[in-house]
Image (tube, rainbow, N blue to C red; front, top):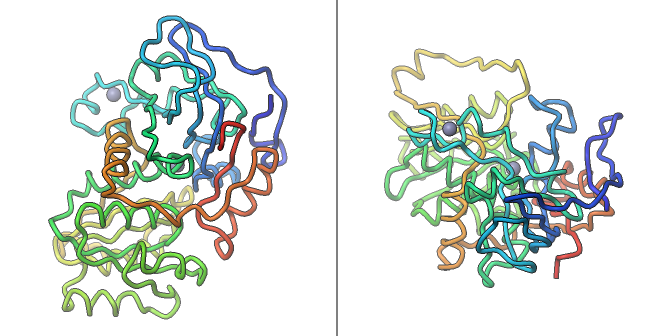
Length: 345
Ligand SMILES: [Zn+2]
Ligand SMILES: [Zn+2]
């Protein structure tokens, strides 16, 4: 079978490998769809801490169930987590599951962009496989992980009821964050992006207003919507220090600045710290998600309290993985790009 990995030249390549079979406590899954995440793109650009494995948002049908696995059968439609927390360390005990030191030690093999992938016993034993409700189609299912990241972030932020938001960066994560924030009762969401295409996709389904970053429109909209107080939460869904600084300036006194994008290694923030201190802005970096939050997103979808339509703009088959990556890197043409496997129907 074929799977996608980072080639020696730093491009994504499809190579042949043996189809995995499940060992004790393991499950293999035939790919239906897996989204390309910003971190996949950053891994390819060499900006991530590990070159690592590509594809961590997969949904598919159970192919084979290993000895000792209960409750799953061949053909079941599932989502599978690539990382799982230990649930036993002091970090996990505090509820900061994605910051568990064990979190990134388990992985899908050989990754989510594979015709068939293996879910290790450790993941299966910690509840990493979520059966999909028939109401959740493959494209929506492939958004469970990144939407889970938004919910995990919002749980850390703990926004007040009817919170107001500024979303800087209207890529897939910015849009998913806005949708989840709406499901949690957001009263107003303003957004900004450089891409006219992404601003057009974002309104009105994800944000109330989408501004061009270059004309300074969002701070004016924030002032108008909040009578000059600033938003409860500014979320920066890009790692650009200029966007982080701009987000900090739009937060109200005592509000939260949620960092959701990966800054380049070694990047620095030039910001007046006395302002940050006196205004009591809480800086909250968040990434990744865990089984309870993905399960909650799934429940919100089944209950029709969360709608993720319109965020996936392209679906390309695994055989066109390189084209899919190129497209995901072009914000003027795409939002969320999914890679599909033979289980997609
Ligand atoms: Zn991701
Ligand atoms: Zn832990």
